[in-house]
Length: 566
Image (cartoon, rainbow, N blue to C red; front, side, top):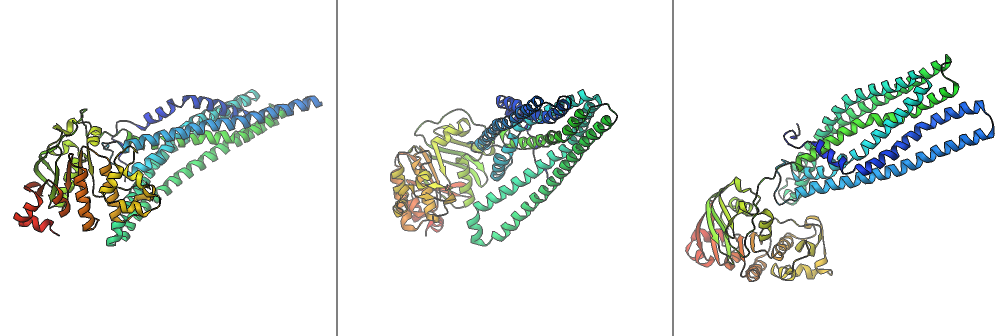
């Protein structure tokens, strides 16, 4: 099972370049400080060798004091440079990860969805784990350069003692990197596949949580659990594969680094035995062979982290570079206009045609739920204009010519399953905090009893997905949010299916009163809402088959009476 990430025009390398370019200042300072740290670490065994060499020639207290002072300077440099260098790099890393999380989330929240072929759970994983791993490149490059500094300092110091020791370090390091660069490619492809499978598991969890209540209702939770276990098991097997590849990489790197250190030590011992280098140079060489293990390990780990960052960046490119599902024009609809559906063919809709003049309250009685859902999807601009035949006009302007943001501001389509968010009643009704009709919306939706029930009133806490509210309370809260938006055109899809008949009657009258003079469309089979409307359109088999008031239709249309009478 492969990740569909090869068809996107923007590679992950562009994302990495962007991250590196805008953090060049922090990376420069971090590189300097981490270079000082690595140079200090490498200078420690060099200083020890020089101290041994110096003290063997001059055994006085002055030489000892000078040696202790030199070691103190080296230790202080190592401590401070590491502390401030990592602080700078980690701050830049965290900030960059935050930027990419916001970018991915912004793409997911755009009015027009992007054609990325990913579910919301996958986008969530990309916005968290992949954003963090991509930002790791901010630390990887300075650490790579500083490790190179340590290796070069060691090679120069050993080369001054004997050219063969310096060449051994340089050739050995090049050989190690050549072997590990080949292995790191396998890590990149394996990591990319693991991230894709983890994202699919996250998407499955999101789907299951969304449908948890209906799953329990018809006993489908066990089948859903088995479905998730299968996806999660695939992710687990891929994670084990990645762990095996990482283990082989780490083991190979450690073995090669140890072999190089052993080679330097043995060569230095052989040279000292033959009198080619002094005792102090031998001490320096043996010490460097031990200290060089850390920068060599860090240096050899860098290709792996680069490939992981690139794999995550390519996953993010799936979202960031994906084209929008629909292209819309720049126009804005005129205020106070009406709505027109002109010969629309889509899904269950067959040349659907009707018009709602400005200020009218129209109810649509859809005999087939699929037709109602398709109509609501088109009006909510969840279906791109090129995906259906015919035209939808808002205030006389075709939908395709209008800015999607302007359409959403002008026309609100409230779905029957409106989402409830963690927060308070007030933040769910008025998320932006700018509505001036919250009180009227609460009263019209008959949410007053819920507000009065709690001491905090509108500031009463609401759990995620409205878990502490009943079905009717959640539906009324969603309706209150739609009414508080006070849009020019309001489309409601089955807004009262979870409330009792008495409350439904009151809500219908309140909606008609509150929305008087503004265009309102209700897709419903509720007799109360149908009766409150100025006129009713009967939607059957994808077309409008009848049009009149609710009471006239009840009196003269037997099929309508059977469909809506309760």
